[in-house]
Amino acid sequence: MKLAVLVSGRGSNLQALIDACAAEDYPAEIALVLSNKADAYGLERARQADIPTAVLSHKDFADRESFDEAMSAKIEEAGAELVCLAGFMRLLSDGFVRKWRDRLINIHPSLLPAYKGLHVHERAIEEGARFSGCTVHFVRPAMDEGPIISQAVVPVHPTDTPDDLAARILEQEHVIYPRAVKFIAEGRVRVSAERVLINDHAVPDGAMSNPAG
Ligand code: GRF
Image 1 (cartoon, rainbow, N blue to C red):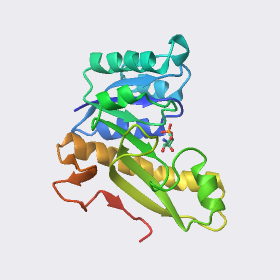
Image 2 (image 1 turned 90 degrees about the horizontal axis):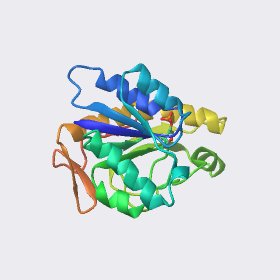
Image 3 (image 1 turned 120 degrees about the horizontal axis):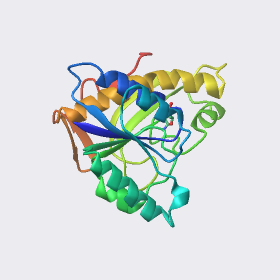
Image 4 (image 1 turned 45 degrees about the vertical axis):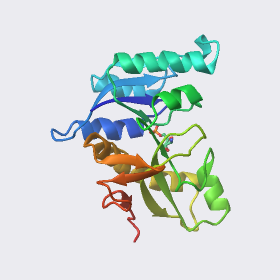
């Protein structure tokens, strides 16, 4: 399955996907890395792996819709069948989300539906959460919402700074994102009544990960 990965920054999740795709038996390849920022380090990672890149600056477009249409054109041109958001820091138009429905996934550094949006680690620590984690989900128009494909849980330690917690979660992001993409590329994932079934099961083996338990 051909992937387009959308990044705005560091691109460590992109790197996890690049590394996974390097394995011979991995059922996906990255056809395009697209960024809205010319200086995103993710672009450099793509170049080093000989993956085609594209940069589209939202500042060059009159509105969100026309920017998103230009992105769709690039993604289609590359022949991508699945769009993976990996730290892409732009809200997407309803039109884009509709067009790529069930072919557009995101990774978010919390156990959704808890802690949508930004500053998730600060909020989890501030509110005394004992556990946090990360979620891979299909994208719907509302931010950080949509059918959950995979989650991993990590403990929140009393002494954690937001950076400590972010690092613990990021390590798990790099595990569950390539795994979720693998399940999709193998054709094992479907959405039914806004719930994800893997191999037609609601509680799939391997889609949950609880390293602490
Ligand atoms: C990750 O924490 C991801 O969950 C969130 O943005 C961050 C991107 O990090 N959506 P990176 O660019 O993949 O290193």
